[in-house]
Length: 229
Image 1 (cartoon, rainbow, N blue to C red):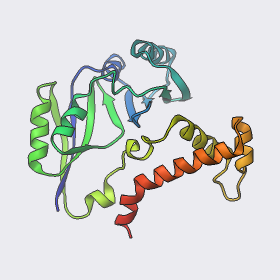
Image 2: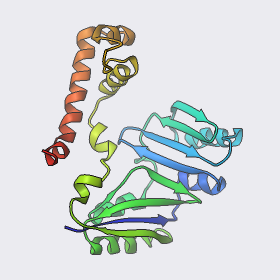
Image 3: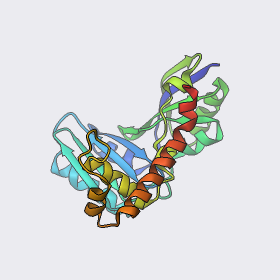
Image 4: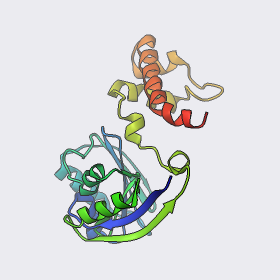
């Protein structure tokens, strides 16, 4: 069974596209899990004060809060407190749903446009997608490959939304604390009581939240695990 993997640019108005137009040497990579956005801004040279200030200006315009920030000489990672899907229109995502195409994260923005990587289940679907996107802005094909056989099973990236989208805030918080404190390391650096104490919750509450988070994640992965059995 053949699939088509294509990479193309779409020029349309969005906060991330405008940012990379204003800073032509930057690239923004965006991940979304339907609850919050995480972006990484990279450039060949130092992340300077101007870029730092413009990130906060963009967050203020979008009415989102920056919950976590990391910085290296040529990159900056930013977590927002919410997903921007209901605030920023994304023509590529909307059109992909219409034409049986799958989007691969991260979503990449550079030089004022989005660099999209998609998987189409047929050549006709891909052609219709590109034709429809031309209504929103200039479309430029970068690459297109026909892939035979077990492409979806072996090479298709799994969306974070599929894995993490069903977790509640308390479940995500418990899972993140467990990871950071070494609950899953061998040997363990922290047991359930240690993590619960750090979170300021009863041990039974922590165990309940983290077990439910584990069950949801494993349930979302079940079809992919079954493919390998």
